[in-house]
Image (cartoon, rainbow, N blue to C red; front, top):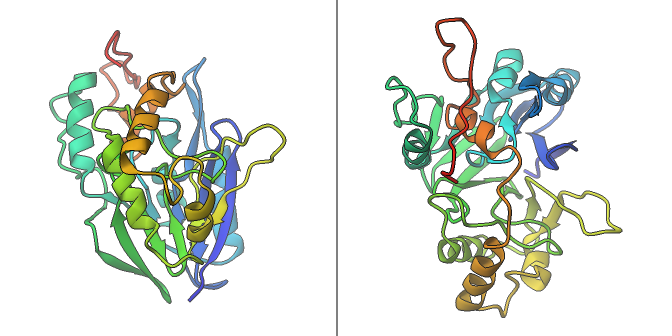
Length: 286
């Protein structure tokens, strides 16, 4: 089947979230939901994620899965809120354990935090399949941006996370801990072997001047015109470009709060003895 895809934009972080479903009144997955976070005050809210929840209820959908493409570094996940409101198991790729281990050490997290993926309801491996009502999904491991990135192929709809952006924006950075430009190139080429009419949905869009935010392209269009990785660009050319470009980039505005929350499947760290939850800021580590 050709799934129905409803996109939602969080303007603050330029993040696209999705509800993908088989039919009204049928079954759905929610992909990469965003928790609103004010970095100045440390306050959170659920206004953006509530839009997804409201849509699910309007369409009378049963949510089977809340899918995270990876542990995001630019926004906090609202997966627990979505699950609490409309159900669905929170799922991510099994290599999240590697990312958890890396950042457990960066943030010197509490001893009770175990990098075993148990914060998530489901850990998928490359090649696994799943069902969302009448839809079949397939798991494609696409590391490079992080070691744990997964792309979700649901029917003819491919959700690529940060692995790829729209053709005029290019590809994901690879300078986070565990990232690798050569690995990313190979992951992308694996995606570009899919049929050219496969619909591809972005997690972010950073449009050039004069273009409004967009979220959808095709495998064929990426092969023809992605400015970083279109057909004809070699692996070595890509790696040189990506590494030189990454060396000029600032860290994402919300990387420090985001990672601490997202490696826990969107849950906050445990409250301290005064009942307050704290997020850490490691100095001179990133």
